[in-house]
Image 1 (cartoon, rainbow, N blue to C red):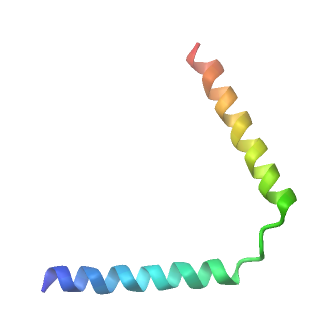
Image 2: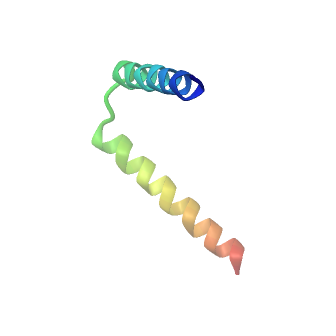
Length: 51
């Protein structure tokens, strides 16, 4: 019974996440590029902090 309940909850959260993703504005190439640049900068910063 517990496993079944967990499955139901999981499916519910999955559908909610899908709906949320659907309502968000579509990501443009420039936004994606900006996110990638930000990620690279953060990685570089972390490497500097290691040394």
